[in-house]
View 1 (spheres, helix red, strand yellow):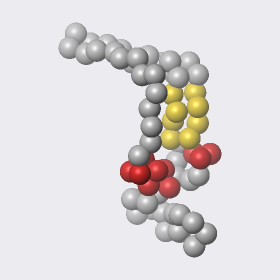
View 2: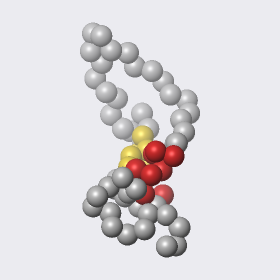
View 3: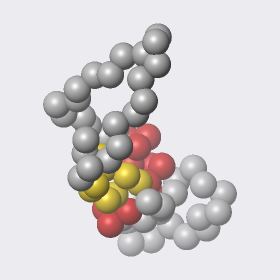
View 4: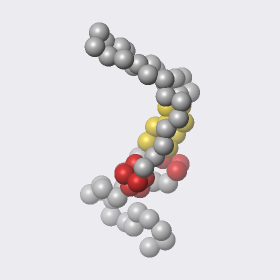
Length: 64
């Protein structure tokens, strides 16, 4: 399985592509689906940039 993992706040370098990510254990009431493609929305981008974090005190977008 492959995964894109958010390693912290920052630019695109905070997203790390992993090959060989472990497949989750499946319980009796679970299903495992194969995802062919996914996308990011504005909330994903804001989370990566630190928009919602109280620990981030610098500008999170642009050159401000």
